[in-house]
View 1 (cartoon, rainbow, N blue to C red):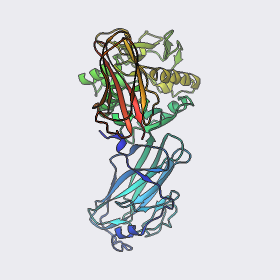
View 2 (cartoon, rainbow, N blue to C red):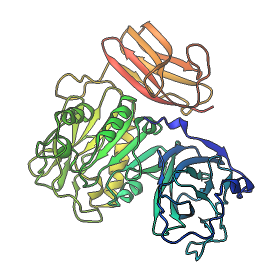
View 3 (cartoon, rainbow, N blue to C red):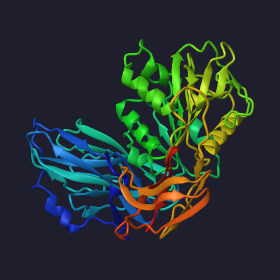
Length: 497
């Protein structure tokens, strides 16, 4: 798994220009390339999307160009487009030391062997590689503006054979985002239904799953995650399931939407069915898949439910996506409750889950198909309010309703924090309890309390140090409360140095 906090930052140069050191990287004089040569290249990166921080710091997305042809070659580099919040910028830097960086307004770097059909071709630099050689092209994002997400795309083209070109879409999401939207619809373009529905007072960002996967360590940077799969199959591949399970185990707050997730993982008629997938679905989503034929595109809200609020919904027509054909029918298991039912047949269309230290909402239909923008906004607001509430533990041993535990771990305050924060919990009765700090991998950083505690309210401070008194690095940590005989809860902490 990639660790979020390993992203590299670099102070932004005020006068960004190509340095003379770049010229030392040029390979000979390739002004005249012989006709009929063998030219090809690869353009790759291990992380197309990274988590970064806002401000005048560059977040580097490092890419590797390799000459896979048999002849020396030079390369044109074009920034195809940018889609970023106001104030954000990107710069292209060449060479392993990133010594050759261009100003943000430079859209292209040209090998100089005309004619040039790229914009701003004045930057004709003979950047090239010998056969089999590799070097870096980095895209530096400067998220100097609001928290959120931004994307840019680069194209590398062979000067020897302009028909040989490779593109990469690159992006970052800043770690101040409060609601991360994971766009996993296979390029169906449904993300705007989710982005617009998030309440205006909340900071949102979008992770394009078609560009790059997202690990549990990356997800743990974000207090709430809204993950949608549209109508595509497969829905959640093995990497996604691992990430979601890790996020929930770390105390995450998840809303999951997609009409075929249950079918894809749990139906014997699905090519992706397996017993392990059924176990994953039932263990993490506390829901049982019944069938993929709801026979209804009308939903009835459960009276008094904090998510549905008793609101009835249509998931066809209006200004929704109108992309539902056969939403799944599911059933709540232990630690879950029905939120909506189908008007025909009465089967469950959505559940809300009180897991061990996490909250989730499982929509067995596509949120994007809700027929009015007003209802989508109301539903999103209710979901985010509910999953963002304080956690209670549950008994996961048998099917039934969620059972409140005899303790409550509250969100830390302040959070994010630096240098210290307060962690508060309540015990309904005297008992043995342990409060400890974990890193995202689940390793114990420090034990704050361990032993018999009286009933009532308890407060413990954490100064961002481990058990040996060493300062911990900025990043995401977890406060875990374990109460003997009752279970455990976790809350997310963000330490900023």
